[in-house]
Each structure stands twice: as C-alpha cells, then as structure tokens.
Length: 460
Image 1: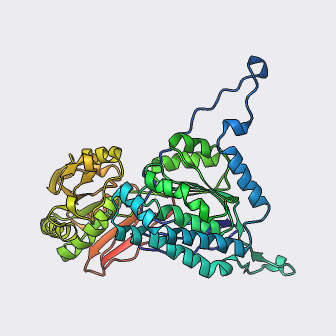
Image 2: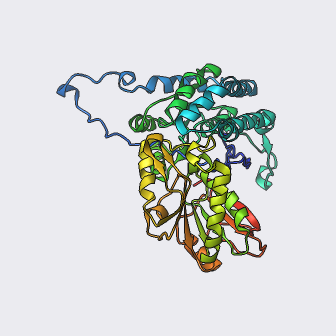
Image 3: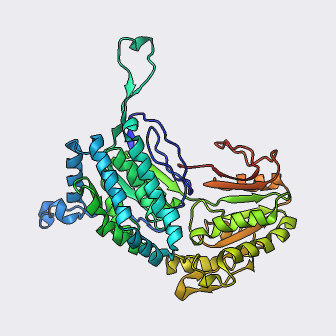
C-alpha cells in the first residue's frame, strides 16, 4: 500500500513474485515481469516570450490536457474523502466487481494483445488481482492502525507511535506484458492506502488499455481516480507535473527518465525494472526435470516475463544432455507444431518481433528458430555456441529465446554472473545442498537444492 510516515513492509510473493506496497520503503516485485513498451520522452520546453512580443499565453488548462483532472484529484484528496477505511474498502470492492463482471472482456483483450490463452490470463492476470484485493480487504483495518514504538529517556512523558498516512496523488505507469496484473496490483495498494490515483496503462497493449480506460472508471469513485492515455509524448508531459508518489514498471532506460522527472519535484518513486536472469545447471541434475521447469518459465507468456530465466550456464556435458530434454519439454507443452498450439501466445508488436528476430542470428539455433511475422510468431528457441559479446547476451531478451553458455565450473559461473549487471532473479539447479551460489555486495542468498528461485532485487 502506498503510504508513508514510517510504515512497515508487507513482503508477500505470488506466482510471479508480486508484493503489495506499504512504506517506509515501498516494495514491488518482479515479475512479472515489466513496462517493456511505454517509452517516455520528455518534450522540449516551450520557449517563453515577453508579453510585448506576442499575444498572451492561453490559460494553463487550455495548454495542458492533464491540468484540470490533476487539480480535481488533489482537491478531492485535500477534503479527506479517501481516508476512511469504509471508503477505501468500497473502492477495493468496486475493483473486485470490475474483475468479476468483465472477466471475459479482459480475456479477449489479452488474447488480442498477446495471444494469451484463457487459463494463462486467469492464472497470471485476473486471479492475482482477485487475491491482492482480498488480502487488502482482510487486513485493511489492521494495516491502518497506529503502531506503538519504544520511547527513549527524553520521551518518557510523550506518546510515541507511527501513523500511516497516504501520500496523496499517486501516478502508476503500467507495462504491456502483464497489462492487467501489473496495472491493478499497484492500484490495489494505492487505493487501500487512501490515495488518489492517476493510472497510465501501456498504449502498446492497446486492447487492454481500451478496457481499462472505458470500463474500469465506472467501478471507482471518479473524484479520486482517473485514467490517462497516450504514448511517449503524453507520458512525458504527464511526468512534468508534481505527483506525491510514482510507481513505474518497465525497462531501465525508461526508468531513468521517470526518476529524473520525479527528482525535479523530489517525488519518491518505486521502479520495478528488468534484468538478465541467469540459470545455473549443475552436472548432478536430472536434465529432464531441469528442462521441464526451465521451458515452462522461459516460454510462459512467450518469454515476455521479467523474472523468466534469460540464459543458461552449464558445462558442455550437461548441455548435450539438456538439449534433447528441452526438445521433449517443448513438445510436451506445445506439441509438434507450436504455432498451432492454443497454449503459446504471440509477441506484443511488430517492433518487438523484429528485434527478437535479429537476436536469432546469434550463435547457432539448436531448437526452434521458426518465425512468422504476419502472425507475430517466434517458435520456442534454444541457442548454443553463443558468445558473451553477442547482442542476445547484452540485452534482456524478453521473448521465447533461450541461449546456453558453457562454463567449466561453478566458480566460473559465479564469476560470469558477478561481472554483469545485478539481475532481478537467479535460478540454480543442483542436487547438492552444499552448492554455493553467487555472492556479491548487497546479496544475501541461501544455498540451493534442486531448484530455487531467488529474487535478488525487488526494488532498484
């Protein structure tokens, strides 16, 4: 929940590594994965002219399409309307009704945008929203209670406690890869904490954006909630305004722009960013067990998940055992012709398709590699003979492509990981309880047995 004045952390993980946000520090987690798509470009400032040089400038509301709405939301917050527990609970129940009443509409939009099967939409999008809402409703009053704290000698005659206060006007910039989940989960926290909210869904997942813009406001009090539409230019213009908190999910490149815009107003931010997640496979593993788990997590949502394994590190001997096992797993999940499978989604856009198609030229295609641009289809693919300097190892893939790199030892794998940017998640497969996993400044990671997903960085 978005609140401040020294609140505690509620650290919970769903299937995609999502957590609600309360403060002192506000947490968001992975997953699921990412705004891989809402690029933000701050427009050039408008030149200022003296009155004698031309006609007077029009009123701000005529120049800025967001000004009136933001002013309305701030006025609502200043009245205290959003603070009572009853009001917060009513908004959460409205959000839950939105999911219930529009389940099919949302599934159809997700299928149009990402080719998501209905079951995948339910598990990774709609169901997580329901769970988050129910959790907030069950715990709302306890979360809102003052928290007594210890007093030092100078404060013995005082009353000392922590009171959670809403931030005020919160901006949520959501991604396209899980456009329902990663829009509504932060919204649950913001509403439960008593904030007014501006929601900016991704314009890339355009069918889901339309449902969120046209239908969702009917279920919430529009005096404290608004949906803003547009692309990079409009988002840049929106970021010029002062917000009391900004919650952004997406790429590191856009995250830097969001943080720079927030810094102008000293606005606190939560940035849930991506990264290249390593997957180490020890020689003592069962290759089919590893393959089943890696293939499921890599190709779920067509690889467009921020906590999916991004590359595999293993010995040449394990690679030879792993490749046929991966082929078996892909066939098990998606059949002999994955393009015809109802369980495999599609790439979000032609732009991202073309980017991924270029990555297929790295190394050698060992499995898959087929593409169909008219269908935005890329087969579940495994690459071998990949070099560290290849583009597929330099950027987050965010697609159904899995490169395998060879290392001769665990120490070599640790060194490889530690010399790269800190990932969002780490996967390790081993049958030994004594295996060491990468240790670096800022990491505190347990030993790994068989398979263990570790979220190394939930907030940057």
